[in-house]
Image 1: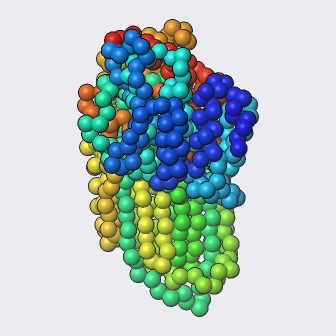
Image 2 (image 1 turned 30 degrees about the horizontal axis):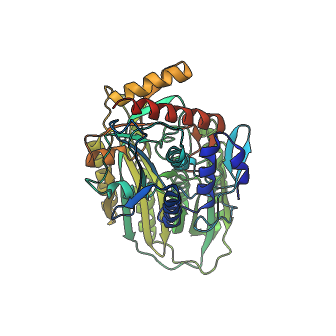
Length: 488
C-alpha cells in the first residue's frame, strides 16, 4: 500500500515513511513496528536493544576515521495520534494509513497522517541506512507512547545512552530550530454524580457540536480555533434557563488534541423544547460569528431524541454544578511568555470529557514553560472540581526543556543552515511537549536541538507535510551529521 511514496524525493526517507504508514502504530500499539525495525536492523547488520519499558535503540559504528567524533543520538517517537473524521471507519490498530499528494503536500484519507513523528523516524532510519554518509558514532533512540503519556521518555533507562549530542527530529516548521519546550501534566477528574428518573413531562434531546478543525493542543492552542468541549458547555449553560438536566456527554478523544466534536443528551420540560431549540439556533449564530476567522465550519444541532433507553438524567442541582464547573475551568491560553515574545507560556486543553450513568470523566492537559506554573494551574483544577466532590489527580507530569542559547551544537546547526539555505534559522522555544526536557533530566550532559520538516494540522485529520520541506530537512540533517563527524 502507498506505493506512490516510493516515487517521492528523497526516496531513502519516503521508503521508510511508507513502512510507517503501512504499519498501525497508535500509542500503546507500537509492538508490531518495533519488531519490523528490529528485523530491519538485523538485515543491516546493526546492533539493537531495548530498555525495560520497550524503547528501542539501534546503534551504528562511526565511519572510518571518525571514531573520535562526539556520539550523536538521533531521537524520535514511534507512535502517532489516532484521529479520524466522524464518517471514517478507520481502525488505527489494524488499518494502514492511506495517503495522497495534493498541491505539494502529503495528506491522509480522513485520518491523521502520522508525519508527527513519522517523518523524523523515517529520516533516522535513512541515516542508519545511508552507506555514503560520513558520521561519528550513532545511536538511534525510538521512544514509545509519546502522544498519550510521554511514557517512553519518562521511563527511559538511565546510564544507557552513550552519546553527548542529541538531535530530536519532532519539530514541525522549516527554517526553525528549537532549543526549549513546555513541560506539562495530565489533570484527570472523576466523579459519580446523583441522578433522578426522567419525569413524564420531560423530553430527551440530543445536541451535537461538529465541524471544527481541531489541532495540536500545544502548537495550535493560541490560534482562533474552537474547542468543542468548551463550546458545547456554553450550549448547556444556555439550556439551564429551561431547567435542562444532563443525561450523557462525549467530547474529544485525546487530551493533546483540541476537540473537534462533542455530543450530549439532556432532559428538559417538553413544553420548552421549541423555545430551547430557538435559543440554541441563536447561540450557533453567535459562535459562528466569534469563530469566523478561524473555525467557520461550526455546526450546533439539536434534535428530539429517539433513544428511549437512556440513562437517568442528573439531578437538577448536580447538573447545574457540573456545567458551572466545566464553564469555569481554564481552557486555552492562560498566559503569554514575558521572556520569549510571541510564545505561549501557560495553557490548558479540555481534551476528553464524558458522562455516562452519572460517571464523569475529564482529562485535561496543562502545559507551561515554567514547571511551577504547570503545577499551579493543575492545582486550580483540583480546587475547582473538588467543590463538586470530584476526585482529581495529576498524572504523567514531565519537565520543560530549559533553553541554552549558547549551545555549541546550535552554533554548528546555525552555520550549516546558513550555508545551505542562505539564511540563519529562527531559534525558537515551542509550547509543546518535546521529549527533550525529560531526556535531559535523565542525561543532563546532553547538548540538544530539535528540528524537522513543515507539518500542519498535527493531531487532526487535516495533518499534512510539505514535500519540498522534507527534501530540505533531509539535506540539513545529512550535512549536519557530516559536520559533527569532523569534530573529533
